[in-house]
Image (tube, rainbow, N blue to C red; front, side):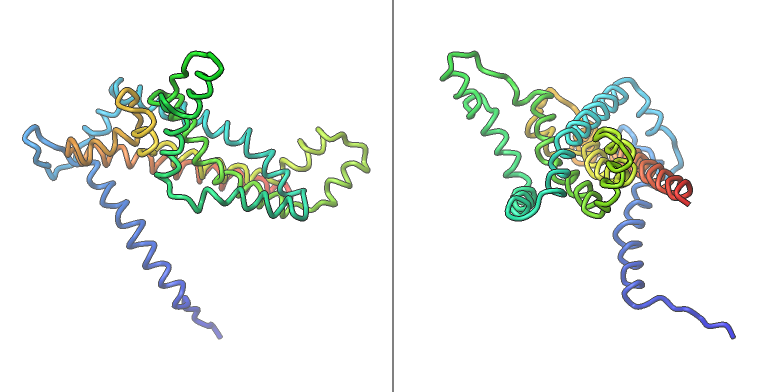
Length: 280
């Protein structure tokens, strides 16, 4: 006798929320990206690939390459800084572990804009860094309103989002695997490369995606720390929507960012599935 399975009410609520808040807005943005804006500012409701062809212009390609490169370098920097922090927090016990976790989550308690203005007070022309350099008799450092300022802002604000997934993966790692590797004669580096990394690669990838994709579409940090000289993809997208009123082109940029996110998630899922297949 066959039994009919029904979704629980909580699952239906989540499904409705997913369709209303995620799929429906994305569908509207996707449809808008294929429309066309005339010189008079009106939108033609006809299928067109003009917006995507415009994204192939050198002006937009240059912004895309610069944004991807900066987001990639900031993500790698977060990995280089965050992995030792996560590894230490996963292994230490007692008061130091509690203190480290508190320090890790303190940035989440502070407003995002306030954290950015904290960087302004640090790297500004009369900020703490330049005051220290002047006290030491050294020339001032011009970091704010440059690409370096945007880079420091990205690393500072997104670092905790990468540390948490890596820390979670390391916490779940069986400590006996490390001890077994040492018993079999493996060195520390061999244990790290062949035992620890393969078991936490999903946390590494998810953490990297958590910071890389938002960095691509970041608007506030480049606007406040980069100034008018530095144009990044998120800033160009917002300007298309709210300043130039070119919603189709802005929707095309947003769709491109969404496609990059879906491609990254697909690669992560395929990588995980391949790892499970090899394990079986």
